[in-house]
Every structure is written in structure tokens, then in C-alpha cells.
Image (cartoon, rainbow, N blue to C red; front, side):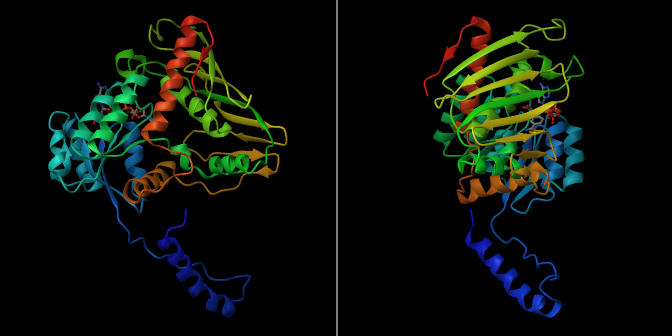
Length: 372
Ligand code: NDP
């Protein structure tokens, strides 16, 4: 979506470029002059300073509309490091006991929750209560009941809730969605999503059901759940799923190792997906229609995402996903921008409903019917 600022920026660039182009020759004009961003900036505190939070913090150095200004951690030494590394003032640092006081801090607009999955809900409720916008990592919660409580709490507190769906801003992904909407693939009838990696350290929280809420499905399978929806552009009406476990010691009760699942959509399209903690080389989306296809591989890793369609290779420059995500989220939170693919709590809720249905289908062995 073009803003007035984008338009003015374009105008400035064009006005500067024209006379130069006429002097230097049209085929070899000087690069356009960048006009620095001067609009409002989203001031963000990260909650939970683990490995993904570090990736986000590094990526945010290149943001123009979002700025890392605060940190919340249970590890005092990390707070010290982060203050130094990211120039975070002491007054914007909190721990898990005292972060409700963020309510009285006018220098923080939003808190980005990047902790183990089971902590997202209680932490979201506290952030909402403190009157700050919430960004939470995926999965937004460990089941649909919790996810609904988060949506309700944010609504009640009059703050916005977003989920860290970075792929919803990725250029090649968005191009496939644009082509599908334009009818380039004809009638879309099939999606395949493959999401997996070999998980290491058996003592990590991802393999502890009390903190993870589930296994590969919560962690990586969710990319195929979410991807099936945005690639096909419909909401599933039925779910079937089958689980396989080869290592019941590492993958104890409550931790799914491998699940195959299938979705049926109102148009008649079907999705066939695999989620696993036991295989690498599984990061692929394939969409097929009566007139053409799209393939993304890798499809959801940190990038570069690679893709092609029946029309050829998708060519867009790679931009660090979390940089784009945080700039776009700033626009959503500060300027009410509506993204092409939603990233709000309702969107996260739809994935949680499907994950609950997948687990129910595994348990019962039956097809689960969904109401729209
Ligand atoms: P890490 O284990 O690397 O970090 C989690 C951090 O949470 C810890 O470092 C710790 O930070 C804090 N924490 C608070 N309580 C606990 C606890 N009981 N056990 C462990 N850690 C705790 O995990 P990740 O950063 O990989 O994952 C965090 C979240 O981000 C998950 O929900 C995950 O699904 C999501 N994620 C999303 C990705 C994406 O691409 N969108 C990629 C990777 C992860 P501190 O010491 O500061 O308190």
C-alpha cells in the first residue's frame, strides 16, 4: 500500500533523477537519492533474550520504522550485555517479576514475546494489562482456548495483538499469492507442505511438553499449517492426521515427532503436509492448479527463499525477514496498515484451531470436520 510519504519520496527521487539522467544518458542514470524516513517509530521491548530474540535484535538494527528500546529477561547478565550491545537504557530493562511496571514507561510502545510457547499466554495477558501492544512468537499459544483468551484480553485492554509470522511479508511468497489471486494458476487443487528438521539437545524446552505444548507440529509443522492457508487462500473444512514415532525416549508423551496431515478446502482443493523433528531437507511448498504451479524451496527458512512457477524463476532480492517484519508491524501498529496476509491474533487463532484439530485427528483416527 502506498502512503503519502512513499508518494512524496518517489516524487523527490524522480525529480532528482530526471535532469541527472538527461546529462548522463538514460541508460546509465545515477542511483536514486534515498530520503530518510521521518515518520513515527515503534519502540519495542523484547521479552526473553534467547536465540531467536538475538536474531530479531540484530535484524532490527536495519529497521527504519521500529526500534529496539527495551529488554525483559530472567537472566541479569543478559540484560547487562544487551544494554551495552544495543544501547538500551537501564530504565527500559525488566525481569519477569517486575515487568508489569512497563505500564508506567512511556518510552515503550510494544512488547515482543519470544519465550517458550507455554509462556506466551500468561506473558501476553500481563503485557496487555500494562497497556502495551503485544507481538508474540509462533505458535501464539499451546491451544485454541489460550489463543482465544489472548485475543480477548488484548481487545479488552484496547491494545493490538500480532503474531510473528515473518513469511507474510516475504517478497517471493507474496508474489505467489498475488499470482494465485490473479488466476495465473487456474483452479488451485493441491498444496504440499514439508516442514522439518532434526532436533538436537534432548534436554531443551522444545522437548518438554510443559513448556512447548507439543512437538514438531507446534514448532515447525505450524509453517505448513499456516502456509496451506495462505497459499490456497481458503480455510480448511476437514482435517485428517497420522502420527509416527521412532524414538519414544526422546519424543515422550505430549511431544509429537512426525505427523502427516491433510486438509480439505471448500473449493475441493486438498493439502498434504509433513511435520517432523527427525529429518532435515524438509522446507518446501508446492502449489498446483489447472493452469500452472508454484514451488518455494526453501519456503520458510531464514532465507534466501527460492522459488519458481510455470512462468519462470521468482526474482526478488533477499531482505532479512525480521527487518521487514518489524518495519511492517510498526506500520500496522502505528498507522493501522492492513497487510496483504494478516498477522493479527485472529490469524494465529486459526492456526491454533487447526493444530488442535490435527492432534484430535491423530488421537481419534477419525476425520475432523471444521465449521468454516
Ligand atoms: P531459546 O531457548 O533460544 O530462548 C528462549 C528464551 O526464553 C530463553 O533464553 C530465556 O530468556 C526465556 N525463558 C524464560 N523462561 C524460560 C524457561 N522456563 N525455559 C527456557 N527459556 C526461558 O528459544 P528460541 O528463541 O529459539 O524460541 C523462543 C520462541 O520463538 C518460541 O516460541 C519459538 O517457537 C519462537 N521462534 C520463532 C522463530 C521464527 O522464525 N519465527 C524461530 C525460532 C523460534 P532469558 O534468559 O532472557 O529469560
